[in-house]
Image (cartoon, rainbow, N blue to C red; front, top):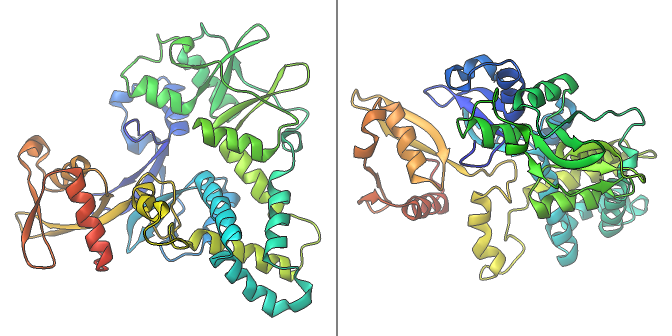
Length: 402
C-alpha cells in the first residue's frame, strides 16, 4: 500500500480468487487502536471477507449504485473469478465529470448517447447540453454547509498525543481522520492513510510515536460557503483526500473526506425532486456513457491525449469499470500445474514476486527470469518494466486475454 500510495489492498488466494479487502481505516481501527503489533498480525484477522464486487461487464450505473448504497470507497472488478481492477468512487466521479466536459466540448460520444434519449422522448427532453449543465449545477453548486449537520462533532488530538490515541479517536467517531489542535489553533491533520504510510510501513511503534511526527502540518481549509466542486478541485489539485472546514469565526466544524463529498454530490442527483422517466433515463445514460468512454477515443490518434492514454491508465487516472491497471498471466509450475492470476501491468518486480510466490520460490526470487512467447513464436526475455508494458500493450492490441 505504501509503495503504491494506495489506501486499500485486495487479498486473493493462491489461485488469484478474491478473498477479502483491507483498507487503511481497517488497519487504523482493528490493529493500531486495538494495540496489536502490525508485524505479528495476519491480514486474515483484519480484512473484510468476501467483499462486494462487480463483474467486468457490469454497467457503470450498477457499480456506482453498489458503492453509494454500501458507502464503499473501493469496489473490486472480477472476471472469471479473478480480480482485474479496483474502482475508487472518487476517481470514478472525477473521471466521469472530466469526460463529460470533454465530450460536451467536442460534441462526442456522450452527447450522441444522450441523443438517443432525446429521439425517444421528443420535446420532453431539452437536449444533452442543457441536461449536462443542469446535472453539473445539481451536483456541484451546493455549498459544504448543505452536507454538514449542525450537531456534527470533530475528533481532535494534540501534537503531543500518541498515535494510538489518534487511532482510538478515529474508531470512536467512526471516521478516518482527526484534526490536530493546540487550543483553538489548527496545527495539522492525521488520517488513517498517514498511519499506514508513515507509521506501520516505516516500522514505527504507535505506542511511542507522537502525532506531530507523522501528521500533515498546516493543511488547507475550506469554509461553509465553499462549493462541493471547489472542495473536490482543491483535493484533486493538492492530491489530498481530507479537508477541514471552518465557520465564519474560524472554528473547525468538520473534516470532510473525498468519499463524503462524492456521495453527497451523487445523492443530490439521484434524489433530485421532479425527476421523471426522461430524467432517470438521462442520468443512467450519463453514467454509462461517461465511464464507458475510453481515453483518446474522441481525439486524433496522434494527439497528446492519445499518446498519454496508456500511461494515464496505468496510474489509475482513467479507469472505466472494464479497464484496470492489471493484466492476466498464466504460468506452468514444475509439477505441470497451470496457474492463472492477475498482476499490475507496469512493474516487472511485482510480477516476478507474484510468480515466485506461486512457484514456492520466494527465497530464489533473484534467480527468476521471465520469458514469453510472442505472436511469431519467439521466446522473449522480460528484462525491464518497459519490456513488460510493451508486451502487455501488444497482447491487448491483438486481443489476447492472457
